[in-house]
Length: 197
Image (cartoon, rainbow, N blue to C red; front, side, top):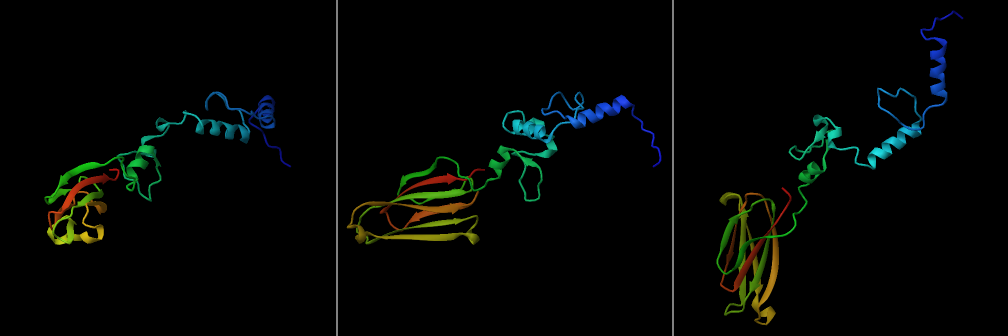
């Protein structure tokens, strides 16, 4: 076997073998100040400690590696999303509470959805000379694409007494709506339930 000259001295080789023979079981110092070898257990413990503490924050990543709430989440994006980005990207999460759009009126009401969500209509049917009470809900961005939903109630099924029902219809952001009554026996209160935007 041919001789191979080593660039290291005997003491340097001894120090290197000592590090490999007895690696550190904990991580200390910094990357530049501690060139020691460590066990796999030490690396795992250090990572577990970071994951269970506040050491790892959004400041730990380069801006390009993070997806923030101002970005759109896509299925081809390999950046790490912040919790704000996940919330913003969840289009099917509903906001808490309701917004009152129209309160206790017999008149027809119109409006535009402030965001995507649901029209929640509390309809009170009052007895009168008609045997049938009805109301229509028209939803759509324009006259050519509007859809009419018709709701009818037979008064005699309730013995001529006042009764209240709640109806819910989905509506998109900026879609127009009109809620009109076929007779004055229909008393309307309209709420809006919004998705996260």
